[in-house]
Image (cartoon, rainbow, N blue to C red):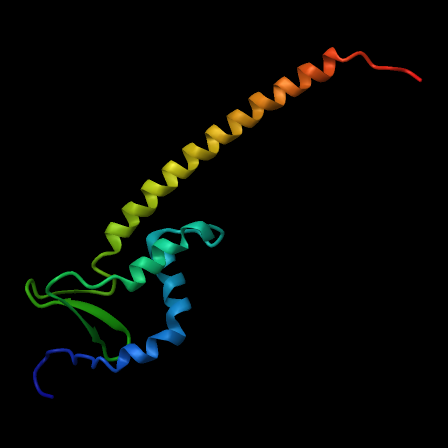
Length: 128
């Protein structure tokens, strides 16, 4: 076509997505800031991957075949999913909660551990 408007993809393209899903999810995980070891947070990347685009946003492909997002209302384009900021915040919130939870768990285990030590010390050793 003529004009500088990027070419829009057909709905057929969504059929191909399956094969690349794992790669894309991991790529999104990296964008969000989820570490490679943090498998418990991968669901956030998966949700981001499956997220619908906010109103006004559409997917286009550049000359190299990379997809990017174009907002028809504000005429802005970005390679990052428009909702990625939302998921970044979601991940950070969950991570903080998770770290606090782990800290409490560790403190509780330490407290229990100390009790065990005291009990062991109190028991007289029986020599055969």
